[in-house]
Length: 84
Image 1 (tube, rainbow, N blue to C red):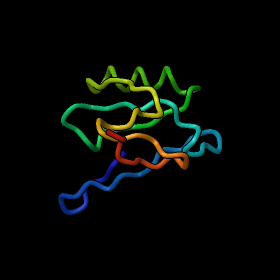
Image 2: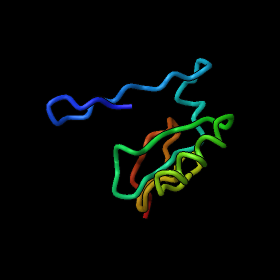
Image 3: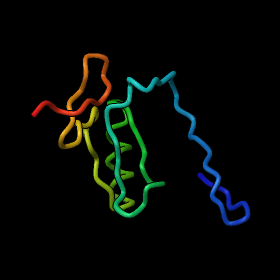
Image 4: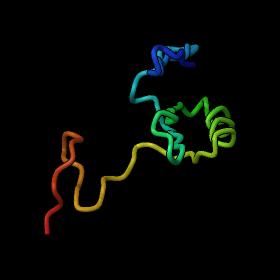
C-alpha cells in the first residue's frame, strides 16, 4: 500500500498474522523493472507469493540467494571475495 505525498510514494508495511523475523523469509518475489515491487514471504505464504508474482509479472526466488559471482559466504554469513 502506498500514498502519494508530493510525488514520492510512502510505503506502509502490511500486517502479518505472526511474529515473522528476517530468518523466516524463504521466498522473494522480484518484479522486473520495478525495484519497489520486491516482496518477501514465508513458507506459509507461498501461495500468496505465487499470486503476487503472477499479478505483477514477477518471479518467485527461493531464499537465501546464492553469493554473486566472484564472492563466497564467510563463516559469519558475510560476503567475502572468492579465492582464486
